Image (cartoon, rainbow, N blue to C red; front, side, top):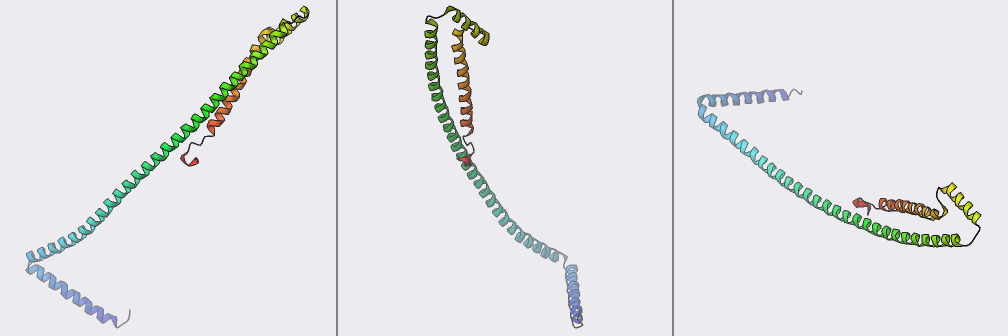
Length: 187
């Protein structure tokens, strides 16, 4: 520390010491007045601090009200987006279901027509005059391979074809439904 600062510091400390003695002397001579001045200073300090707190509380309440309003607006927006998405997905599913139902009806009608043609052809082959031994051998072969007479084979073939068609249609339907985007952002 520079030497010229030391005398200034000692004078400053002496001034503080004299001021402290004067304050203590005033407090001893006038205890009620000094207490009331101290209380007045404390009240003013608390009032000033409280004003700052009131402003902070008001600002915090305003921020809270704004935050609640923002959350409510975001909730309404999200609900509207979700409702739109649900309607969009439901419409997509309805379109797929109608399209697949019409395709299945058309395929079923086509299969029934083919089955009737097959039965008519089979009946014409059976009713045609032929060799009785060959007919017996043919029925025996049908029973040996399919477990049923030759007349029952077209019905079994139709049932197998119907099951295959339904399985293919089910696989196609599942793939169509799975391809529908269900998230709101995937439109």
